[in-house]
Image 1 (cartoon, rainbow, N blue to C red):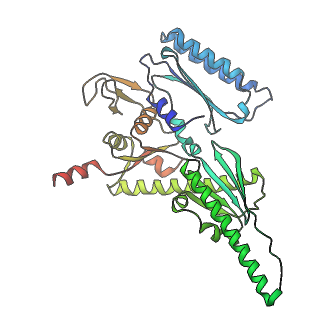
Image 2 (cartoon, rainbow, N blue to C red; image 1 turned 180 degrees about the vertical axis):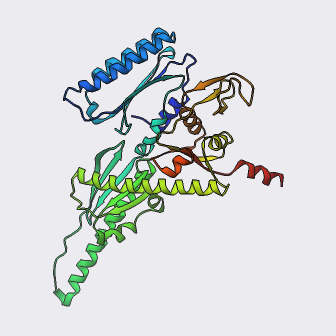
Image 3 (tube, rainbow, N blue to C red; image 1 turned 90 degrees about the vertical axis):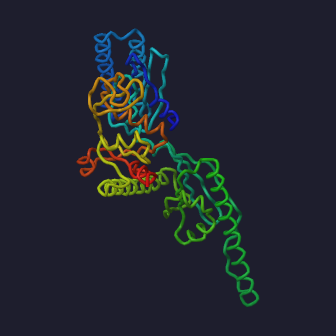
Length: 386
C-alpha cells in the first residue's frame, strides 16, 4: 500500500547510473478475457527499454529488472481492477511494487536517474482515510474509504424503546415515555460522537461523512466535537440499512464535489494572488524560484505538465535552462527529461502539499504550474531591513 512516506522515499531516490526504472500499469477493459493485448503492449515496452539500455551501455542489473517486470506483467491479468506501480534500481538493489487506485491514465515504462513519481500527485487524496458513519436513533454503522476501497468496520447499537401511544394519567405517561425515548436517543448520538472522536485521535478519520435522515441531523451535529467538525465534509440522506455500494456511491459523489470545489478555490486564489504580485506564483520559472526560496505552501501541478531542465549534482539547484554548469555553485549539472519529478521531490522534502490539477485552459495558459505561497521572500527581507 502506498503512503506519503513511501512517495517521499521514492522521490528522493537517485542513481548515478541512470537506471531508475518506473513502470505504471493501468488496467483497461480487455479486448479478450485473457488480457493478451495488455501483455503484448507491456512486452513491447520492455523490449524497447532493453534496446535503449544496450545502446547506452547499461549493466546487467537493468536487464534483470526489465525481465522481472516482464515476468510480473505476464501474471497481472487485469490485477483485479487495480493499477500497479513498480520502482526498480537494480544497481542499488532497490525493488518496490505497490497496488494503486486505477487512475493512472495509461500504462508506461521509463528509465532515468530518478523515479517518475509525478503521476502519484493525482492520488494523494486517495491516501486520506475517509470515515463514513450512518446513524439512526439507536444504531450507527462505521465505514472506511481508503485507496478507493470501502469496508464496513464496526457498528454501535444502543437500546432505545419504541414510541408508543398512551393517554394514561391525562397524557402524563405519554409525555414521560417521549422524554425518555428522546433522552435515550441523545445518549446514543453522544456515544456516536465519542466514537468519532476516538477515530479522529487514532488517525482513521481524516475526513468525515455522515449519512442520516434529515430530521435527526441537528441532534447528531450537537454531539460532534469541534475537532471532528473540522473533518466533516457534509451529511447526506440515506437509509441506515443501505448496502455498501449505495454508501460508496453517496460518499464518492460528495467527495468528488468537495475536492473539485477545493481545487477551483485553490486555483482561483493562486491566480489572483500571482496577478496581485502577492502570495501566489504561476509559471515554471517563478514557481521554481519560490520553491527553492522556501516560500511555497502548496504546489499545483497541472495534468500533463512536463518540462526539460537540469539539476546541479552538487547543491541540487534546478534550472529550466539546459546549462552544463550550475548558476549557483558552478558545479556540473545533469539533464532532466522532466523536472516534474525533481519538483515533487523538493516539495515533499520541504513538507509542501502537492495538488494535482485537472485540465484548465486558464491554468494551462499560465504554464500549467503554480504555487500558493506562505509569504513572498522579497517582502519578508524588505520588512526585516525596514
